[in-house]
Length: 335
Image (cartoon, rainbow, N blue to C red; front, side, top):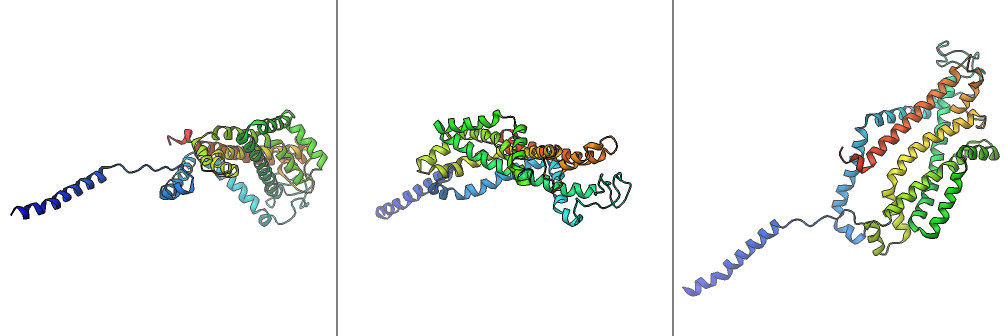
């Protein structure tokens, strides 16, 4: 009898130990998920967490943007302008610089030309739609060139520091000491007023501000834990700049890019108003410049393209403000 009873003790004891281990395992907290680790070996351990959390951040920014009514209005206005520019060859297949009817017909006077005709008998509405293509093209291309140049200079200066930083900062300061609009006029006058020359001249004036912003962001981010971890894992400078720092520095650059497009449109309009635009194309600025001599008798020739510039620049600024609110975590945290 004793032998039979004792033979059961190990099984009972082991059964009790198994229950305790199971309870302890169930009550233990789950291991923490390190979502900011980018090393390949650590990334494999937290792939599901990273894939789950990454879209959440993007959707949070999207929801914050869509909850901003002024930002949505700006986006809708810009969408209308872009659609008109894209459909310009379909809506008005003729040359917008061609004379189509009697000159100086006021808006509403002739149903065939809802916005009237200018001093040379050209359709104002056709010029307005085709001019949107040129103005937006110059604004977007100049912004792209200035952002690329500014990011290259600012990232190199802010990341490496030292003598490289001093040299590049001096280069930026040289460009910023020259009045921007004067530099723009001189550059276009020397290079001849063509669309590529105007685009490069506007980018030449705009890139220093982007470089200073990117440099400040890189100087703030280069000492973060994620960068230290990447250096400890032996990552090269190029990978750290492109994969670790640049994605975190992009939100303010995106906001500045939207404002730079608006500024570039205004610069191109000012150049065309002064007669330094491309004479072979039509833009909003050239339309304003063509009508400046008849402001008293036919003010609509300058008012209509001027209103188009105001509305487009306003839409871009509203979009920039909305992006700033959505991409800045300190502003969108409570939304």
